[in-house]
Length: 296
Image (cartoon, rainbow, N blue to C red; front, side):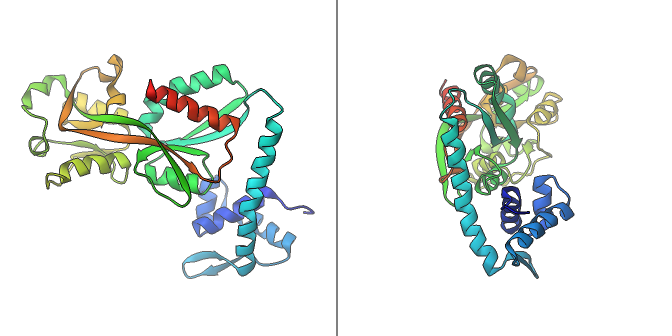
């Protein structure tokens, strides 16, 4: 290798960020030996050790820390170069990576992605689903360009842009609708709750609604899919609390009754990105359309 390999440099940074070769390999979709080889090639090119093993995993040597500092600047310069070149083209192109929750992915993004494909056929948008913590971490580590997550969200040097206040509602099968007189924490606490998995921003929001009345929830089911939750509710196995966007269309609430909670429960969605992220034409267009769709 006669020149600095930017791919190997990115892999090295990810290994240090995650603290192990195996964790970086999982994220990159590579084998652990392949990741180790990239770091070793980088060390051979620079003729110095960049990583060392500790009882807690992998950490950077003094030389590795110096490289990390330069690596951040190298990444910025590369992004600026790409952006400068793209200014000569009127077409919006390139690849944008976006992370969000399953509900927004299913019910908010499809029309936006369809519009992007029709208006900017050279722009590719990759979508990854995960909970707020996972998406924020991926944005921090520059594995995702932007995230659409439940707020609040915090992280190192993140820019957070609120874009939507959304109501959360109760759903129950139409056959059981009349069995509930009021939709308060005290009444619902005694009924079977089908909830999102623990650790998600949505689940934290729902738990907080009950905790405000000094109540702890104990769901009969915990699922990671909004569609799976709605199927279980339709079957009469319990009720759930979901975002209104998940039942906004007639086809999405078939067989379900939708009711506002008392007190009303809201969440705030926001866009998160690194403060040092270069705003390419593609990223700017995705953000513009997200704002447009949510405001509409």
